[in-house]
Image (cartoon, rainbow, N blue to C red; front, side):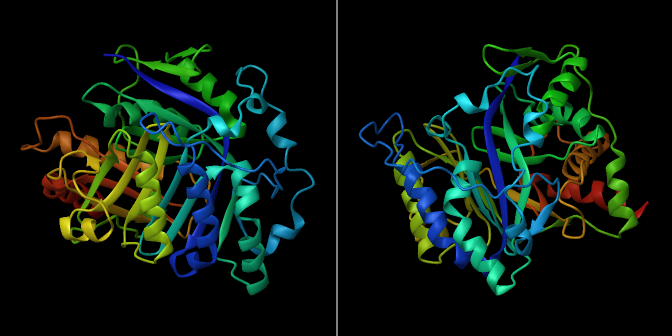
Length: 394
């Protein structure tokens, strides 16, 4: 059965903020959520955006690594030069794609970090002042990644979506392209450096993925695509004695808003952030006009305290997921292949176990700037623990 991976041409910015400092950005985050809620959804057509039309103020810079905010004042003069060099053969006209037509944003919290991903134009307008404040206060651990990204959204209607995304992205990691992985209730998202979009097209075309110019999407089938294979990127984990941590004390749900509840879901999320009730793990991701996904606590009581119940969300409350965390704080932001390599190691390892699961093995992703997180079904923790322990101890 075929799937699609649609390439969204909107340039995205990624901001990483330590959890202890996210209060500085609360006002800007709320403005972002307010603007997004005003776009409404297909079940609530009465809402229209009142987003202002000011010219965006660029942060500039397209370094592949994140840079502390004390370098912000030196940016801005050459912000568009490197992005304009390689846009000829992949026919996506970024300037023609109005930001109002882009619905993607992602705000995620872990105990250590808050990661904000939104269009570059919104980031330039909404987060400039708090970044300047961090500069004045000497908060160099606040990071704006200078690389701009575009997102590739996997729309898989098959049962083997976890292997599909690994097969699709493995050749990109092998070619030194750093990726961010995010899962929503509706599909997986891969963030790709904007300047490599033409290279990505060439690599995937060589791997016999068909690209449709009319829909800006790759057609993915099980025929002719590569198989999941071992990755050399995990050697870094062994060399640095870094163990992926399976936190069985954290039980989460990956859920989505019901039809017609998109605006209410965004408003509720804004209330959570405004009142400092954010749980240790929480995320909101919008992928289209009527698709908003959430990572919420499994506990019904905790979800109710946040304003969410089964009446507001979709998905089974029995599909509990457990996070596997890899600390990437000692690596440059552009280090390729760690999350994809870990995911392929888990998938291949589970398949080789004598009592492996007989159904397709599912994984979800939550890439932060300083950590890679893979989320696995609770019932598969024992299998995955054995795979990781056997591999790291070798």
